[in-house]
Image 1 (spheres, helix red, strand yellow):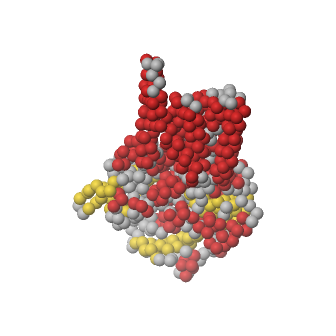
Image 2: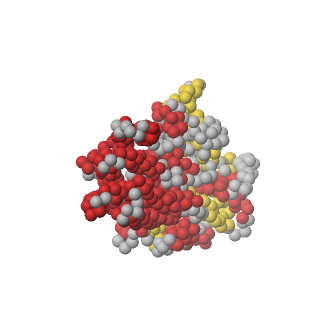
Image 3: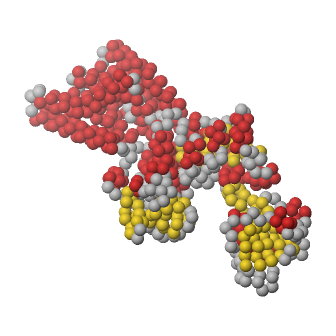
Length: 639
């Protein structure tokens, strides 16, 4: 991906190299200043004590300043947590008690060092997960902030936020696409991997759509704006991504309930140890090592890692169903057109009449099709691209609802390519055995009133469809159903080619909804569609995945997970990622609790001092982070 130049405040954001918001940056700046003050006061105090050991006022005063600089923010958060009953501040509550006890017992240096070490560890935790947030933040910075507007005969650079529908812009080679639009001039390759996860650039030409957040690689393009800045697919994706980072999974809610009992439990243990051992340092050590940093990261760290992988692979996670239900599905329901198939007609077979050469049939069909934009004609041209059409000397006419007709002015030869009803209405004999051999949409070719043969067109399965079904079966999913509004014989052919076990054909959208409800009564159902006419089915299933959601607002809104590309292999990847994330969350829960209780036990018996405890209590947090980072290995998973 080429870098996109931003202007103004965007440059500051890009140069920061972090995912911190402005408020978090201000908080970070304050923490750095506080840490510098605390360290300076402690250092000066130690030097003063060494040089003037008899003075008992200056050094304690400096240590008190250090304590206030580092301790006051912690105390403020703790008090806020007590009054709001927000147990995400559980660490600050326990640390506050510990540092106050240290200060009152005369351990002035320790009362400043403990919050200093904890804040440092907290910062490292926030910036960890092996750059997991960086990939997500990188996507946020992809959107070009300016555009080159064509204003009459002049070009001027404008803020992309001010672009209006219908305006024309220039996108130069190497520049980012600032808005969703349609190409009206030029051809180029577009790098879309920031949205789709697909590494190969896409060739685009006049009439094709381009999307904000992608990059123009080769040639200059003129684009007509089709969506305003706030309504681009990229803006919607970023909005959903920001919400996804705050997904509350069941395990995080479990931790919240656990904290309501954890803090009184720890306080009781610390009080009991202080009472029975008369050793306040052991009680303080218990308070310090029991800080629940690891527990707070149990679900958030894996979710950020999962979002990082998903974003890079073009998978948009929208809600907690990704964790709660996607990993448990045992039935998959596919839509046919545009989902399991390419969604476009292709020439799949042909039948020649008796005594007719195959080349004559195909060359005649190609000659007639080369002048038409009809989907059937385009399918012929695409399938016979190795042949050269020869329509010199013919007058060609396209008859709406019938087909194509060409007449030679020299010898009067008449060629026709169209539907069965039209040819038979002209008295051309079409044997029933040829009609019966064709499946799908069929067009017939004739020459001077004599049938040359028939061409059969069908929607074809995606190349990766069968391997996707096979991979899902290997993951333990045991039922596969395809729902389609197409005919029985077409559905049967697609299922046979892809390995799907069942199908229901000739369905209306409401019939698909009924089918989902029926399957749902016995299975955990994953429904996959293109989001256009499958919105009801996607919402009804336990989990809905929308295919090819880039550019489709309805697809993004109707599903729980949206795939930015049409790569079906992202479906098993989504299931694997969901299962891995849920597994890591459970592992983190056990890991953090075991480490916390081990540290508490060691502190109770005096094995860990207060200073050592302020460092070692972070073992649980870093263990959780390292365990969560294993999810990032799925970035390289090849399916």
